[in-house]
Length: 390
Ligand SMILES: *Cc1c(COP(=O)(O)O)cnc(C)c1O
Image (cartoon, rainbow, N blue to C red; front, side, top):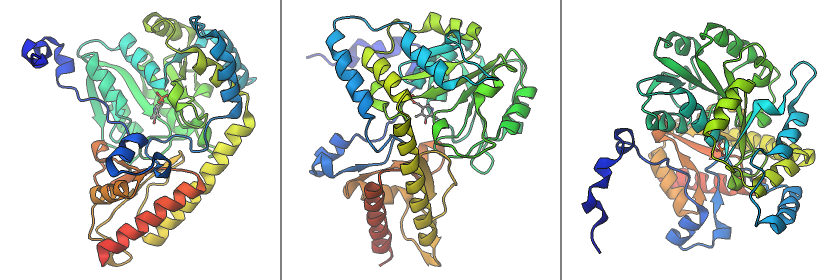
């Protein structure tokens, strides 16, 4: 066989693509199982902020019913899901209509549509340091320039982000709560920020972890849409709704912006299983309540344990927490780096996430698991830290 690179097609790809590296996902369970010779069932994966309790039973039943119609294309407009979302999200003061909703193959799809709609070559896109890796990726693909604003205490520095706006700014991503730091912004902070953004600059509020947050003054982006038509709120079924594998998320915006996004949206981008399971889970309030309860319990357990171990962590309102492997803990040298802890956890069958590519080389991010998964993670972590000291 000839060497495929001999054709030189890589040189023919658009310049924007040549410098890109693919998004680095958390390691799949089966891959680690093959590498270390363990049974996949014995591996604990707390790396991708997935819902640990398994999908809603109602989602599975809805998909089984849907399987009989596999020969048909899905509803390209997602009528039923949009209706269900309107019912779920509308309030007396802030009604949501189907014309405001754009459905995506995951909310990452929506982020991509937004950039495709608004960002041309050399336009600037602002986002925070330590923010979701997809923003930079989709910006680069469109030939845009990423303006990364230094974080403040690991969270967004909204004043500095507003100050970075200039004539070239087309788009701003605000992640609330932020991944991988778990930091969050209040409604007052975001409203104040929006007041400083010119009305022809689009702001995306990425609320992938919205459902987990308890804080009373947390910003529900939907309550700002009427006042700021340049705002787009994105949410997902991948986290609290437990459907990451199906890929379904959505954007809520003015009908004008939704109309633009629908022009670039591939037809049938959300498949029929995803549509059916999303509708069923939206209506399964017990499932979401249980997901949140398990998350709250796991978050308390993990953060209390980090306190005991004297490992600093960034207080998080999401379903994950980033903690640090410091040089010293409880007055003794740790003798181990975050990367080494990560390697040893992998060897022990526990997958969490190094966040060095988010400019946090001494941190590790762990997704909250079931009580049993959390305990396995903690027992392996304790052993690794003890071994490093002895
Ligand atoms: C997980 C996540 C998403 C959602 O991804 P999907 O494509 O909906 O699975 C979006 N933004 C952030 C910050 C996330 O962490």
